[in-house]
Structure formats: C-alpha cells, structure tokens
Picture 1 (spheres, rainbow, N blue to C red):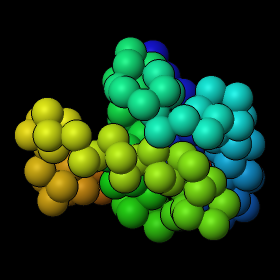
Picture 2: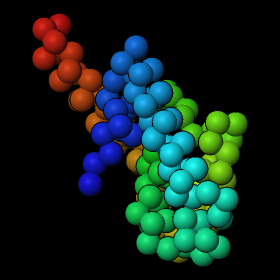
Picture 3: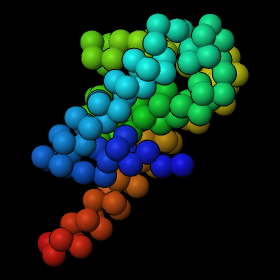
Length: 125
C-alpha cells in the first residue's frame, strides 16, 4: 500500500515540497485525532494490528524526513503521534527488528536522488 500524500514530500523540493508537507500534516492530524486519540497505542494500551500497519511511520518516515530535510512529525505539532512513535520504538520486538539506521538513510538518499533526477530530466532540464 502506498501513502502518496505522506511520501510526496520525499519526492519533491521547493514549493512542491512545502505543499506536500502541508498535505501530509493534514492527513497525520486526522490520524492523530480520529484514530489514535488519547490512547498510548491505536489499540489502546497495547499494540495492535493498526500499530503494526503504521509502524513504518515510527522509523521509515523519520528517516525519510531526515533525508529530505523536512521534519514533519514534531512534539509541538503532532504531540500524541510523536509520543506514539516513542512508545512504539520502545517495544523490544520492534527494537530488535528495526533495520540499521545508517543503511536505511543511505538507501533513502540514493532513492531520493534517483527520483529527483528522473523528475528533473522529465521536466526537460
């Protein structure tokens, strides 16, 4: 499954990226307000299927933000989602199965460079 609104910021720069960040924030705000609410996890006090489904936000999304130079999920704009990420990453089985951060950053940098170069070429530059 792809989340085009959530990953568009990774595939864009400049004004397009700023627009993508605003759209991602809107989607994440809905996720925080309507799905997470005031719970520790989407399932309440324990991890459930929805937490696992959105687990990529806790690690991949953070690495995508770093690679694209755009911090979207912050404690001051999405405090409950930010806290959920911290809680999710503290679960031992999650910690044990996360990929190496440096390898993931390197992979994402290469991926982003390829995406942006294709866009640059297709726009006739």
